[in-house]
Length: 329
Image 1 (cartoon, one colour):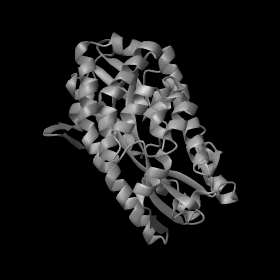
Image 2: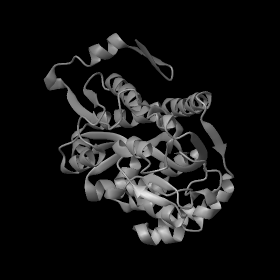
Image 3: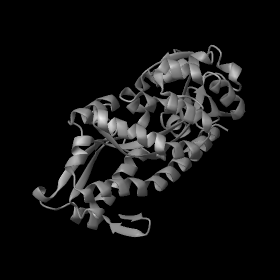
């Protein structure tokens, strides 16, 4: 297999040769993800591993473990803090368990669109959050600009207007920013583990759930819930993270290789996500799913009215809240 990275061609044989150094000459890091092997984040991490091997001449090897083989997200994050887990690739929103401001990506309509969401994650505010995380909790964020795509609703009854949220039993992650936002919008927010969501829809425990369209399609929610509402209410980013004590044990060249590889993979990753979303929405339409579009500006306005309350409830820093509001269109 040939893998091209922005003009550099590295064959599978070359990668294998680079990774075949004697054990004493090679540093091996295990990278955990909660996503299944076919997920874009897993495939991107595997490409990153190949690029790191090339950049370091095989001195640094990343072993990729998808499907929660190393534990669930919170387990892996706690493990990085303790130094028992080396690397994790997943939504930066999970980091809110340690630095509350990271939960903000789970707040509807804090970002204008995908490009602006990514730019904010790449900017000084989120870099400052990442620096505090490394210093206080021993988790370093190498990159946080791998798009996860806009989150939309899929539901058993049509959701066409903001008023249709009233009383809607919607599955939300068991996290305060999601719960409180939808409660303030009048929905019956129902915290539920992701693993129980399909059954919850099937049994009528919930009437709706929300994720990026490619994720909704991959989990086959459309076979139960026949209405996809493109609200684009959330924009999260995937982060590449490493235990700080592991990071400090690496050479400067190895650290640079991790940063370079993560940055080089981002455009390819984000293109794949956008294409997957387009393909998923077409496939659902072909399966007879009712595709609904909303007045996004109106939804933004309705949710943003409640933002100051959410800031107080969740405990976001005033600096972050003021910055995000200054960026609103």
